Length: 221
Image (cartoon, rainbow, N blue to C red; front, side, top):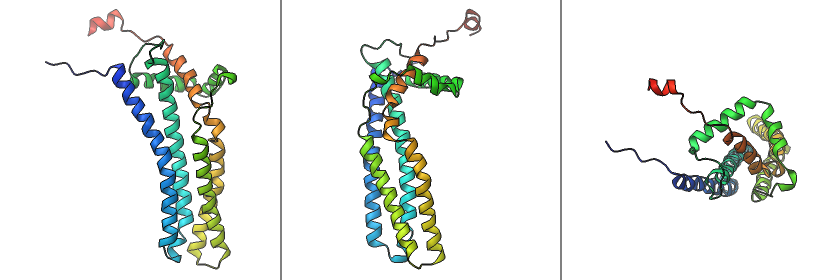
């Protein structure tokens, strides 16, 4: 019976590089699509329907910011893994992405609240590069989208309108205020160290000895 083909480091490298490029593509394309949809909606929708725009823009912007941050954090984890395992001068053995990622998550769970402190202690501030520079303008673009939705909501609240319209505008304002917390949490200076933080975690994970089957378990199989 033919053996199933196994993924080797070269194939894994290509797959992970492709995933990081896809993450960047989403980061650049989605905010522009939101802005375009908002502009078209403002021109096409009638006045009663236009009242829903501030809430819709606020919701989509907040969701996309969350989505973007998650994609960038995932990309940073991949980039750090590639540097330590798949680059030509890497010092760590290749176990495969899925196996390594499982160990990464186990390490974080085992550390719990101490994980953040452990990572902070492993980072040298003078050696942190200015990574993810493209995130800053896109971050502010999301801020501009959120601010525009809140401004539109305030403008509509100043006019006499049906109760349902006022309720929707208040929801948009509430989302704008709540988003301040999320914008502050994932400000550009926070993500700037993302790759470096993942390098610290991966080093700790990859230095854990790989469990090998005991003689008893080998005999049982």
